[in-house]
Amino acid sequence: MNKFAIAALLTIASSLYTSMLVAAEVKTAVSEVTVYTNGALVTRSATLSLAAGDQTIELTGLPSNLDAQTMRLEVNNKGVRIGQVNIKENKFLEATDPVVVSLKDKIALKENDIRQVQDSTNAAKLQLKFLESLATGYSKEAWVGSAQGSADIASWRQALGIMQSGSEEANKVIRKNILSMVKLNNQLSLLKRELADKRSLKASNNSVVVNLSSTTVANAVVKIHYLQDDAGWGPSYEARLNSDVGKLLLAQKAVLWQGTEEPWSNTKVTLSTSQPSQEMQPPVLNSEFYDLQEKPKPMPSRRSKAYAEAPMASLSMNDSMLEETVVSGTRRVQEWSGSYSQSFPIAGRINVSNNEDETQRYDLEVFEFNTALVTQITPMQSTQAYLSARFTHDGKNPIYGNQMLVYVDGVLMGSAAMPTILPGAEVTLPMGIDRRIEVKVDNLGGVGGSGGIIKKQITDTTDLVFEITNRRASVANIEVRAVYPASKNKALKIEIGDKATPPTEEDVDGNTGVALWKKELGSGETWAINYNYSKTRPADRDLRRVYNY
Image 1 (cartoon, rainbow, N blue to C red):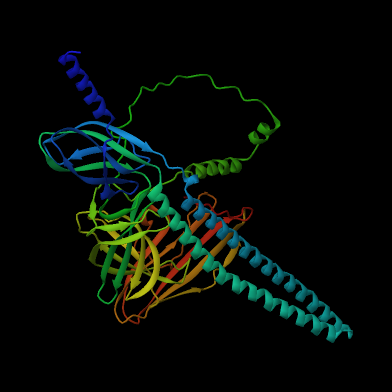
Image 2: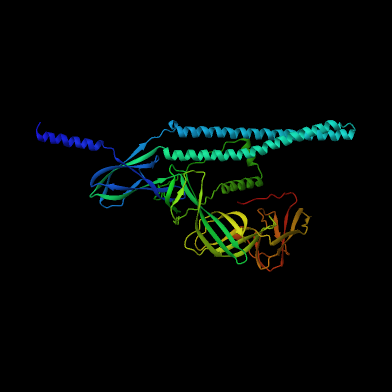
């Protein structure tokens, strides 16, 4: 064999040896995450020590649901070029892992213990119900016997003692089971968390095999970016009002959760209101044509004849029902992620568990507003007065709506929904019941009557007085709302009485009949509003209330 043949064989052997070499494994770690309202962009990083020339590395630790379409790879060294990239799947069989199998068995046993305690509690409750029915029967029998002079007092006392001991025993079981359920649920939660941690460490995962070419010996940082669905965040708020000075502090917090295959440990996290979407352009429009056809002839039937002979009142009722169905079938869906895109970097590096049962809260921003305090009252529905804070958002970015906890002068008032507040918008936030404003409704005794020579008419009068008293030490801005009904039939006449207090505004927000009275009420001052109207109708017709939604 000549030397050229030997050289060729050596070259082929070297190439085969290189191709059979296992790619150098490089462990990656989650370094950055951008969390959207639904989903997250995860970045894993690793530091490489590269030789000059071509080489292959295997980046490990990536999730099993890695999507090649959305994955992006980058290297921070201009002398390093990325070549072919392949995703390698590494299977993990959960059924053969002894640690996971053992934890699943323990969880099943603990769940069975919980069911047994629940059965015991249900049995004790059934026993109490049975004893209650016995006690009812005995008390009836004893009452009848005493009335007839034939009561067996000794037997009755014996039965009462049995019922009492049985009741005490059943209640004792229920109290014991409540404590047992708390303990068992805590143990079950710990076992499930441990199982989730084991699965995150041992779950099926992917590796990314990358061919790299480096011009020189170099160090480089490689980053892999990919999307994950099972994560998200939303805002929550604490509204703290100082009613003495009208100052409102609105603390914006973030509620973050994730249930992906990987925990985010020592990670830089940024929250974003943006929502990545595959819909990058508007829908394509196609031509639309209409033609005419003859109407089908109606099939005669008894039912259609009955409808044809129905009075006009029935037809108008059907029309209103149809209109109501169409309107009430309209749904308004409001999402707090809007056209504005904001990012909120969380300070430092944080740990986010991938247990879906856990949520984490982080402080984002505190807004301060000078507010006008307004007490709103709807006396026809409730005699409670409700305090609210009204202000204009003078910031540049929106405040996205969600739930808020409301504190007034350091006292927790409750929870309320906060709307999305756009820049420049005036908003009124509910602050809960205002106990320093008293509300009374006095019925002056509306009268009813009838009259008319040819056709008898019936008139019903509503005559009320709303009394509002300010018990604060300062002036209170009061807004009172009530509805004057409106007629939907010419035969029904509704008139506001002469002694009714004229409202400040009528048909508020375009709602027919909604009246608004406003007044600055001094300390200790009482304000009376006369609410008076009459309804006149034919005596042979009844009133029917109609709602417009």
